[in-house]
Image 1 (cartoon, rainbow, N blue to C red):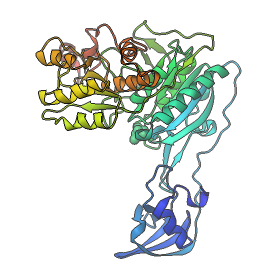
Image 2 (cartoon, rainbow, N blue to C red; image 1 turned 90 degrees about the horizontal axis):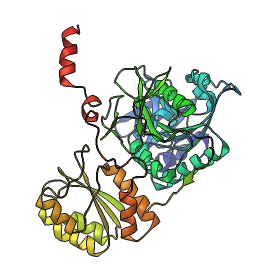
Image 3 (cartoon, rainbow, N blue to C red; image 1 turned 60 degrees about the horizontal axis):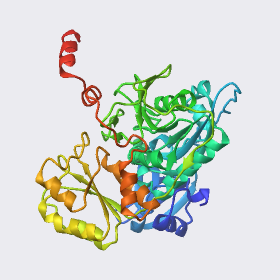
Image 4 (cartoon, helix red, strand yellow; image 1 turned 135 degrees about the vertical axis):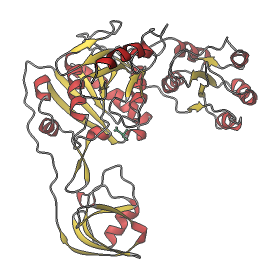
Length: 460
Ligand code: ASP
């Protein structure tokens, strides 16, 4: 797309073209209720196709719906330059090579206050310009794979990212960082944990909850932590690296199959579920919290298995759910269903006949728990036993999203439900563990009350 219409598509683009207006045109836009005067701004690649965005003389930006535009008069052109100063990333032969693969999300964008445009900040030069500390850690190479907000990630991007990881490992990088929107980072972390097996180097996913132009942004620190982990850590697994506590004290490394975004706005949103995190990372050090991880290796052997069956769904059970929800998946030829059940893994009785149909049609149905912590246990109540008779397979302590990804991956490899079951129930990357650590739930989810009380006596 031409720079003159950067980010514009559909009706918004057509309207601009109709009146010979372009990005940076100084315009008057007439709509039924009045006139707006300002500069047409570029839009991000993921913006909607319906609005023309202009910066008003007051400095505010407004989006004007293209269909309501009666006329645009162009008065001139005022181009703004909004690039982050590029500095050449210094090369130091003594430092490890790290590759940053960008997929999008807040971490890849920076809001330019002057223009109101969200711009990508991803070339090594731009990153070095905004986080110069990165050059103390490694030689960073960057590549933008995608530029999407993470709800738009899907099989095409997962497969593309897994292949890019394989390529980079073979090329000899010592670590990989993947910039990603936080919203679905744990989904992508899970599928990459399955698609990329036996990695010899750390694969570190990172994002930010606040864009780098905001004073409270977590982008720079998360980047430094993740790049340090990729360059120096001994942990050769797919991980998520994000803020540990809400303050800028340290980051946590979470195993890709045990992590979940748990808060819509806190910077410390990612938590390890059903276990304790892999390590703490600060600008000075990486401190493992456990030792059962895969260690870094010097070889370049990695297995990339990008199988994925898309006809898989997660059904989040709620009381009074009607069987037509399951029926429609059966009728639409879905091949796998992951249920997030109540308590130990339950759904109501009216769903049973639909589950029977799913079983008869050879659909793989797995149970997980909405509680997130804990295991599916289908022997405790009659409900569980009944459902197992209907072919529902208990998914141990796989998180629902992780079970969804694994089922897609397993069904991508085979049509045989018994083989699928074998793949599903054999732990590949920590998605099923034998037990939860007794301290995991308390320590990393808000502290131990007795200790909190003790400390509060001395806290001013
Ligand atoms: N909506 C954004 C995304 O997930 C949020 C973020 O990047 O943190 O892409």
